[in-house]
Amino acid sequence: MKQLRILGVAVLMATMALVWSGAAWAQTNLSLITAPFGTGSYVLGSALEQITKKYSKNLQITSSESPGLVFNCRKLNKEPELKKSMFMSFTVGINWLATEGKKPFKKKYPSALLLANYNLISCWLVTLDPKIKTHQDLVGKKIALGRAPQISWTIEPEMIIRYGWGLADKIDIQKVGTKPAVRALLDGLVDAAIIGGYADPVSGTMSPSPQTVELLASGKTLYHIPWGKEAVQKVIDRGLPIAHYTIAPKAVAGLNQPMDSFCDMVSWQAYPELPEKAAYETVKLIIDHVGDFKDYHALGKLMSRKSLAYGWDPKRIHPGALKAYREAGIIK
Image 1 (cartoon, rainbow, N blue to C red):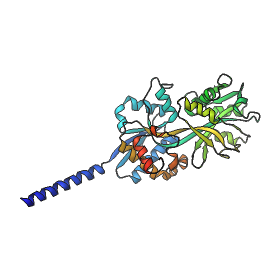
Image 2 (image 1 turned 135 degrees about the vertical axis):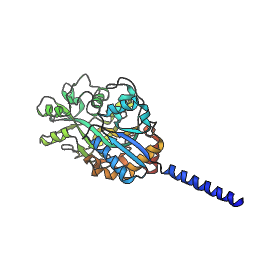
Image 3 (image 1 turned 180 degrees about the horizontal axis):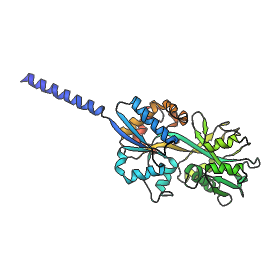
């Protein structure tokens, strides 16, 4: 009888070990919705799927395109069950519009949380007129921004002009689109236009946006107009969680000294319903293999360990992601 009891205990312990082992290695299946085919968000999302297949034994991420980032928010909130297994490409600015119920959203949505940044976008004004040096010199002038719904190219700059500079009624703002804005500047139809690029906050490296490349290729002498730290902070104080960003000298032609700007964080975000374990495994994988993204898209060269959580208050980071960042020493 004693031997039978010992054998029974051994079998029970072995069974428990197998159950534990199976739970530990149970595969986590997640879906990622990105952005339209061919965009940087789409390609880097596909890269994350491939990196996961290459390096992870118990995490499977399936990436797919979507009509856009606003669609992502609406889909996950229309089908809340998806929040447990799906995350999305999103930005700080669009998330703020969603939580405030501002256009293009018709109602308020809950706030998403950070998993990891994969892009930082910074936009500012440029002129061909050497007499325009500060925002005060733009009074009575025409400036061209992006299209009305564009968060980084129009909504955020307009908020700085309105609330940071206090000049919304003293500047003629024309919302024409990013490429038309540059063309209008070159044709002399406006006095200043919005340009920008994608940045690595650690190295200061910047990759100019397509319309900025077009302007740089014109060979014209450019004069850059800083937003100013105080103006950016006034907008942050109104609740829009953009981040201060200093554009490094020589990052683009004509910029010979550091310039105070802002950045919006383009990132993979999830709602609190995503399990902590799933968020942790995803972010740990990204941290460990962040250098691989450069092999899939030029913007991947701007990704670094320190940029993954840049500009985020820890309270707005998913608990699972925050655990991974703290383990890696990226966040204290």
